[in-house]
Length: 142
Image 1 (tube, rainbow, N blue to C red):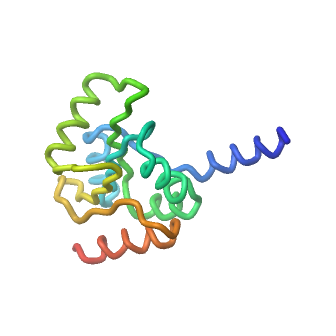
Image 2 (image 1 turned 90 degrees about the horizontal axis):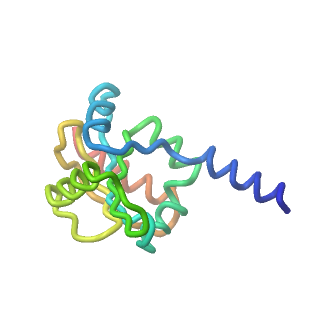
């Protein structure tokens, strides 16, 4: 039993995508890699749909592989049970206001300079459906 739990935990870690925190870090990485930014506006420890999206899409090997090649991941978190550093909380709030975030999860695809390319939220169907929707947005923008 313990071995099974350990194997599942390791598989989840291996599947996890590499998320950046802080706009400056994401923008620099995106400019350097010539990739757009996928900003996940989330309530990671209280929002049920955010948890569902993370489990069904973001924590899958398919999403991790796609993201590694296509985007720079930025987590813009608004947790309730844990406290962010004051400067990060302030920056996240400013980003939410700038992009007029009305609810969670809201995924905003952005250029490295901050231009909005499109938005997504939770989509049923797992990583294949979600990635196809993200690809459609990216394909529509030069």
